[in-house]
Amino acid sequence: MRVFLTGATGFIGSRIVPELLAAGHQVLGLTRSDAGAAALAAQGAEAHRGTLEDLESLRAGADAADAVIHTAFDHDFSNFVANCEKDGRVIAAMGEALKGTGRPLLITSGTGMGNAVPGQPADEDVFAREHPNPRMISEQTGQALLEAGVDVRVVRLPQVHDTAKQGLITPYIANAREKGLAAYVSEGANRWPAAHVLDVARLYVLALDRGEKGARYNAVAEEGIAAREIAEVVGAGLNIPVRSLTSEEAGQHFGWLNIFMGLDMLASSAKTRARLGWEPVGPGLIEDLKRMDYSAA
View 1 (cartoon, rainbow, N blue to C red):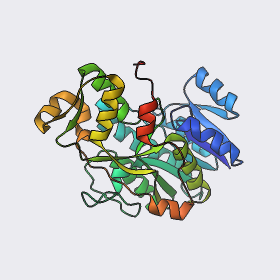
View 2: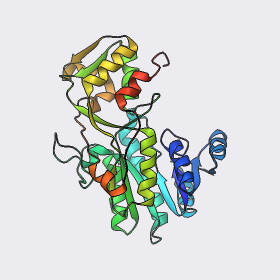
View 3: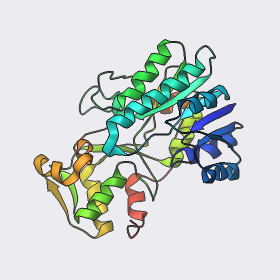
């Protein structure tokens, strides 16, 4: 298949490109720059010029492909709600181009969208339509397209990591460096799921090749790592103190990041593994955090 891939030069997308090519697919990668086009060409992919703000460029990319994998997202979390709304518009535009074609659209969400019972792992078969996280806009838009006949599939992400980036933990590390304190909320018992970026990239391709219309897949290698354990590793890496904050202190300390810091985001991938034959093999989150270079800001 010829696959239109948004985020093709990004953290996850750039790892999906070689996986798609190795599986025998062609890749049409979205990029806004000459440097991005050159990076795609070096990998053996074709560049499609456009941006998330230019919906016509996205429709054209979807029109030119047999399938779409959407991984691009504006990760300015200080403007999170607006960026989630933008993602909804992006998904709707590409979905409109695919209506009546039977061609699949893989979109990206977060594992929390499958969490219906606090303290229980998020589940692939749960679609918490009224989840308060604005990221739900992506799945709500995808669901509307699914109900209109589009082959929509969802990959839900945890904290995706290597030794350079770790999802929300990357801005957490920046905050700890700035404040001179690796903090956690209360006892730090709340847990965050995680997966290595190469395992996540393989899952997207499996969801394309083996996935089913309307299915949701959790890209989870580790169901939950306690916030205190993460803080202790970061504190050791930065050589700074580690301590608990009250919820009141956390709001001032973490800023926008505080909306995530106390969340217990346990998530399972048991159904994903059974349905797609996905077995993550990459290093765990704590291992990558221990191996990263903390001298680089």
